[in-house]
Image (cartoon, rainbow, N blue to C red):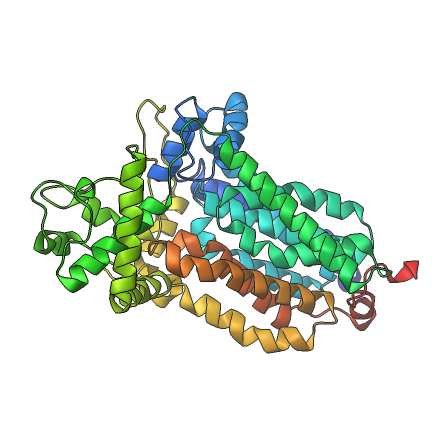
Length: 460
């Protein structure tokens, strides 16, 4: 009798993912509200409030924040939007797989509370917006395949457009999803050629949208100047010859002084710690002649000293993927603050006991492999064979798409970015999610057959 009553009170399997998602959303709000803000977050908000907009970072978040600010001032609504995309996307994906109750709980908790996604989710960052939007799109497309309803593709589209425009390098991560989206949109009668053409059309549309959004700013900044300055400094330190043009450095700055401030994990120390100063690549405008001279100096240095260039990028990649040294700034991993920029209103920090406990845990984990990128990438690679064996199931095909997206997104990062954990947010989340799908998600035989990779089988 008691057993029958317990079963009657059990949560229906189809409702469970949404209950977990609601509880996870509430947990994140309690732990992080109104969202942790770094300097980049504060500068984005200042632009959203009416400051001069630039394309130093993709302006998509500026425009979304401006709309949110019209309703409720501050970071809260943007923070809540990203959380809603994350948790609803995870619920859609797990629900599409028709897992039993225990597997539903395990997959959702493993993915959501893997240390890197858990820690980054508390910030109002474009990187969090990217992985939240992509997770939502994956969940909606999985739902489209599982239910054989193309309407879910329409649901996925806004998230895909948002993801394409919120990070400059995000477009690479979207390529596998463009193919999946086109395959689902065309159905079983389409040839591979038609699927490829439609995938390219969608990819081009998302790319064009990202370019259009980036063009809607008041001040355009040549972003390559930062890479040029950092690499010229690295090669100068390596060779003992000052290769930076005079207009990029303060009068009197020599190689020993530059070497004392230079770090392979970020260019910020050399901009802030030299006695004679260096030019901030983003804050002042360049003349056409200066841009030409900087470009020539950069290319010449790489051509003349390829070994020094390779060593610098190797050290950057190791710093990005490896364990963070205790001497490095904590802000390379997370920012437990509400940074204020210019006339932005003051934002009160989360002072709850839960938040303080989580930040103490983050501080303990900060110099361990738990908050390094390489273990997550390794987990994804180890799961790839299992995903390939299950490629004819929805879970396996989705895992393979996630892994392809991970590596397409990662490769440019190794050349472009400093050693900040947030840049690896999508790679870490997608790798853990792919492993969970490959190893932990098992549907019943009936549902596994129904979820076999063949869209809209009933329409044949």
